[in-house]
Length: 159
Image 1 (tube, one colour):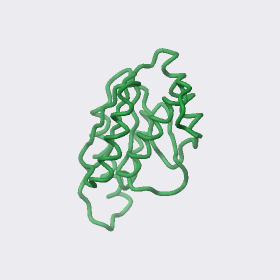
Image 2: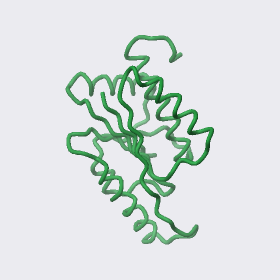
Image 3: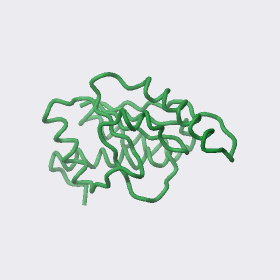
């Protein structure tokens, strides 16, 4: 299984990097994990709707350029489907069982994902209605992927 996490913006916080690195290391026996960061678009604090769309479009183009053909894309989006850890594990196991060996999870920037990225996505996943920093979301996601593989293998950890 090859899992790519494509995210907007460079991860700067050392404590988040350390947590992500730990889970990526743990995941090594289950899957190949590739972390891809695309540049965020510099923009002022106050933006019009049109300006926000331009920022999201530019970030979206960078994201889409990193997605290869044949990859099952799961976009993280507030309006996506909320799943339990067990349901995410079932989803990943189902993809593995039916021949999808490449999955890309997409984490947008501070303004979210452009509609072109959402259209490319095969699934949309939500971690709830709360807004989380996208850098923290990467840590939460990689932990949940690790948890999913532990559940799939019937190994202790997830409770």
